[in-house]
Image (cartoon, rainbow, N blue to C red):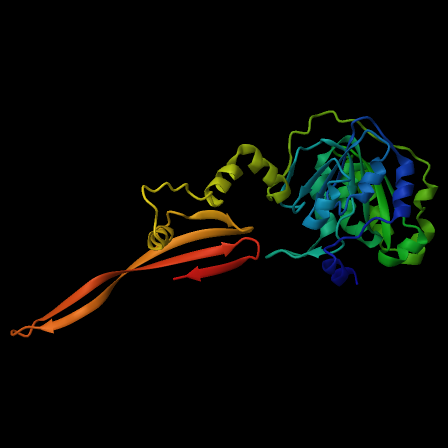
Length: 346
């Protein structure tokens, strides 16, 4: 189920409420701290973690429908591919909450790589010094992420999901505090420990790995030390583009050119016959929107010119004389704006 199910659901696995509640008990979020979830889904987890605090929440979501709904929960939301379409200032967040897709990413002319590792490598540098990582992955994936975790984080702790939730994807929670680089000897020791843990059988892993409710440590999410100058996606979100277009006035100019104008005011010198009105209408003089007896019509008139042969005669030398006459074909098209019907009159 892991591979096919992940693709069917676009890699969307919300963090269980029970796990989210246990994590919230551990967090001490300082004033104005920034929290980022690069795979935020509908934003419920990050919003719950920050509830009741002064922390600023940032989310990124690939699915546009989920991203739209997330805007009501998080302070800042981007729509796009977190791995390739997003640009973020480094060392600018106090918390990185990472629950990435559980799958392999295939690339041309290269080996398959776990997406969990790709997200970890891509986003570990957005954490400021002493910022915290909360990583949720299947425990067997620890062996793929071990080198990056051990080299860039200290105070690494691994906790098993509650037994009932653990049965689905065999997930664990990894907590770590960001450091520029951990000493080589210390990093190698932590890496071997993570790889060994990933090789245990599920039952053994549950026995030797504590659960979150047994954690007694307090995780302090620090306030920002540097400004967040860049947080944007290269993908254009229509929900953000439309207000900008309206603000710059471009939309008004476009609508002015596209929306039919009111019927021209006609003041002839003498009363017009029906033939005169027909020619003016077909010639385009009366183009635009009109209203008559409660009906709204958009009128467009055109006149096409053709030649009609009147006679053909032959003289003594054998040459032919063709007499033609210009013929004008008036056509009027009308769109009923109420019934959404088009009528053509020739």
